[in-house]
Length: 370
Image (cartoon, rainbow, N blue to C red; front, side):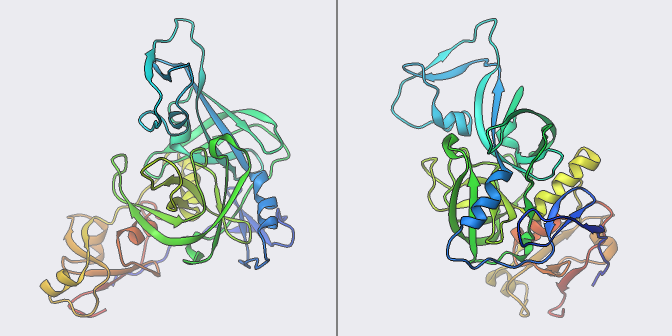
């Protein structure tokens, strides 16, 4: 078994942003909860009040090259929130060529979360992608132009910044500590309705989803709090008001909420944002293996009796970290850095925290021995 330890950053005690909660501020300016103490009150008023001032509305503008309109001149509202290809309805579309003196027009709207007192805001990459201008509106109705600091299309996370004072940054929670079945609160701007709060529960963790824009599988928090067009980039918080995810997408055949919402875990968000600020791009570690999710049939075929969960190592690349650490084809990985790994989503969730050069502890079976 290859074993080593990851480095950790120091933290300093700071003032609290949520009354009665102890918080700490790390070297990157992120506010995190020092002790996780879920609020078991009968309603969610305290959570809502502590979160809505951390969530902003983001409107993107671009010069239209060729804008699709419904008959009567109205822009398809689903395309406004989701982008081209997501329109629904019975209206007749036609193409309208832009005039030579066209100015940037509103092309989309989403949400964002303030993560530091000096104006850094995290949102989804698809909310700001292709924008020539970004307009951020706070819960107190102040409006600012925003600058794009960096983006990461693989996690669909973007970091933008405004120059403003008296901001209310969200308190980061530990998404690894989230449990299936606990309460989850979504805060955002669905259909442009500012400061909308909805409630649900955590449905699953490390939910693996793949799409054409992703190089591999993404690991999401799945929940059933209502999320609709315009919620993208908004906050998912726990009952202590701590940020545990950034709402990113829904599973739906209509484009509207259907009970399956997905958020990028806050620990992944924190790492992506830190990399963007420090390096300008996201640093990603690679083990250098190819693996398959183990199931009962594969276990039987390969005479594996110790477990039917984990990742079966199908290939170890030459000159890779895995090769140097001693991993071999036929090994079954069941843990990484102390976290249980039963599927690709859980593996990706843990890999998202690592940078090239980090050392990690891999737990695996070989010849049915741990």
